[in-house]
Length: 331
Image (cartoon, rainbow, N blue to C red):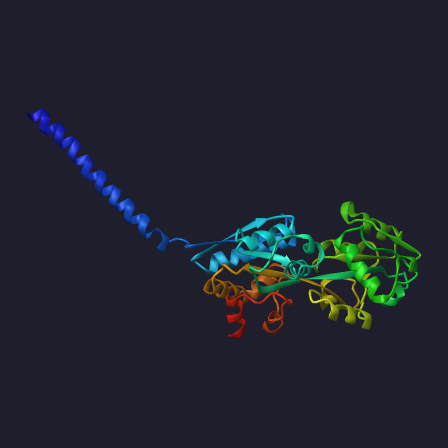
């Protein structure tokens, strides 16, 4: 009898403890969403090592620190079309997309005219940074203006590259062809083929597209007698006015030791784009916290300084500001 009572007691009390522990665990699981991040967003960027990837990580870092109910994760890709498609489908909540690519997607131009995808689920959160088109010239080449390029030795970028397409725009705007140059190379950026030709004097000018300031551009100033060319011209003004995804911009002389004056040029913008499935309240909070941390972003890199509010309201025909961003910029 005693043995049975003892056995019953041994099996009874653990049952009580098991029930109590289960109740506590259940209660904790029920309460967990109140104490941890309740909403996860995924931000698509360029490939690892790109400025887009760096920017995405900075944005997520600020969001994660300043918005306790939101967890931001970056997802790298080397294909902006993939990012746009994933954004459209809702697989991504945010993505950093170049303005000319975004314009092509929403207006069915360029490569997108052949894709059977309608990019209607997209909205702009904010422009993030400029990607200027720069023309770098040797300071002994006698090139002081855009018109001085004619008759010189230049590198116009590899066929199919963004550099070659940009040079094509300039040639069209100026009414030039490759025959207007003594030498028109089509060297790629890979393995620094373009910069080697420039530093060796094979070409006197080269086109470059990227973020400023950059260490690689400073090296051209230090080692290869380089200057950034001011390409302010009525023909360029007319070109930019005809192309919605392009804007006039300036590369500051403060960025580079050896640059005598700021170089006026034009370029595209990297845009923070959202899926319309991102709710207005969260979108408002994200844009607000990014603008509240403008100085911190600028300290991470001068290019990542965001735009004045008035400038940020300007978008691309065919795509609107997200309701949350529109609310922030209105307030």
